[in-house]
Every structure is written in structure tokens, then in C-alpha cells.
Image (cartoon, rainbow, N blue to C red):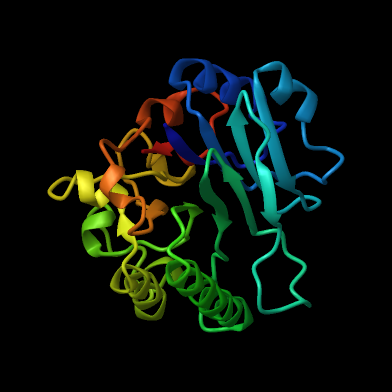
Length: 253
């Protein structure tokens, strides 16, 4: 079973690129982030024509998450992160596919920091940690996939000082990610590639794609109930070089 995560950065705008990648990669499950469309604007007919069922939670102009399954309909479990009924941002969706619980996650960016956006990021992460712990307690075979907006270590970013004050590298954000691993979640990309830089995001700014000035923001974490089944992991880097591409590339296991 091949599971991918892809911050699509506007699903309707990138639809042709997305389908080109989908046909080449043939993932069984795809977790999307930054749909940037309403529920009604999600291109479900085109996605079904490509052979995928889907569940999604949109939001006008911003955020939005989805889970696609090839030849199947994901069984929706929840479309919001527990713990705050007043949080209306579409950043979390969870579904069952072939006996595996799969989450598509779009953690808040948190910039500028300090400030209310960073406070929201840490509060969101606290709720996410509580939910991740509950899944471990239930011994669920689970994959938590998405754009975490966290660079876990300096090894996960190109050599630069320009991100020194960025919320993506803030010690509190890194600590939250580390707490997930300390709980028992497996960072699948790093598990399979312990000694090499792996980037999933390259900004449109300052010629960062040609310079390979990247960051690892997109992660697929595995619960202990499923981690022993991991056989390979990677990033389809080439997609980032296509005309009109997202600033992220798909990561997969």
C-alpha cells in the first residue's frame, strides 16, 4: 500500500499537474493540504474520473484538507481536530482506508512569531499531541500525514541563516514534533533515509528551486502498530520543477 502526502497549494489551480503525478506515481492513498477551495469547489468529479474516492474539508481561499483512495471510498471518521469547537480552520481530516486510520494534517504556519498566529500554532499542536496519544493508547494502525510546518532539525533545511527567526524552526515547534516521536510515532522518511538531506518544500522566492534550497516540512508518521510494515519512503522531487507546480513536492511511503 503506497500512501502519499502532498501540499497541493490550490487544488484547482494545480489540477493538471496533480493528475500527471497521480498517473505516474499510482499511490493507493493521497493526503492533500491547502486545497484553497470551498467544499462545493472541490473537484470531486475529476478525481472520481481518475479512479479515486475522497473525503475533504474545504475552506474559502485558505487551508483545506482531503484524503483520496484509489478504487475505494475513504470512511470519514472526523473532519476537525478534537479539543476546540470554536476552531473553524480546515486543517485536519481523518478516515479509514483498508483497515488503516489515515489523517491529513495542515498544521498552522505560526509566522510571524511571537504573536497570535504562533500562539495558535502551539495550541493546535497541543491538541494534536493529545489526539496522537489517544490513538497510540488505542493501538490503532495509523498514518499521520501532512504538512506539519515544522523543520525537525537543522539537517532538514539547506545551509542558511535566513530562517533563524522563523516559526518553522522555533524550538517550541521542534519540541512539539519531537514529543510525537518520543511517544512512539515513527518519522518514516528519516527512518528510511537517516543520513541524507531530504527536502519537501522549496519556496518560489530567491531562486530556491534551482539552488535546491529546501526544507523538510511534510511528514508521514507511523504508529507502532503499523511501523514494522514500512518498506520504503521518498519524495517525488521532480514534480516541484514542473511549470505551475506547488512549492511542495509529494512525499510517500
